[in-house]
Image (cartoon, rainbow, N blue to C red; front, top):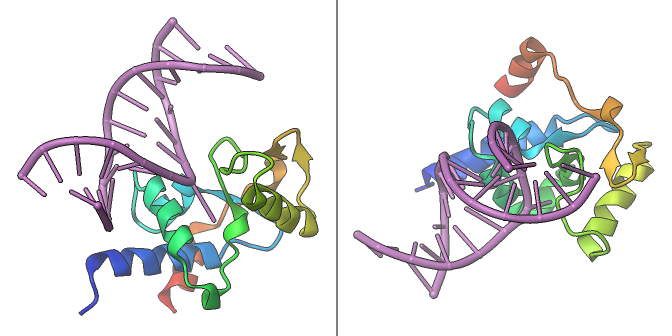
Length: 115
DNA sequence: TTCGTGACGCAGT
DNA sequence: AACTGCGCCACGA
């Protein structure tokens, strides 16, 4: 039988999948939208464990300070930055320009999550 | 069961 | 801006 943790991960994956191309959301934001306030760290864990076949836009999830969570110059940091740049997201130093923050309409979001 | 850990967040200095 | 400390919580050793 599936554990409660699996259901939480599924909710997290659903939200991440809804982040629009060219936009970014923070770990805490994803947790909130998934109905899991205070679970920012669980989001990071869920992404680390995410099955490859889901093809989640994991690179669109960054810290609340708008910077990539990985240490600069690490392979993961570079990969994430490349993915974002490829979507047209621009940087101001180490952080993403504020204009790319995802600000979902909650009504629309709820409708999308029903499926 | 207790303890350390982490792709976090936030307030205080 | 840079650092630090603490809250938070699922997991595994």
